[in-house]
Length: 17
Image: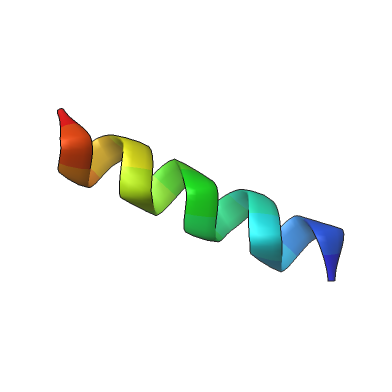
């Protein structure tokens, strides 16, 4: 599940930008 969590964080980071 770490991979999915990393993807979610990446998605949030992209939204932040």
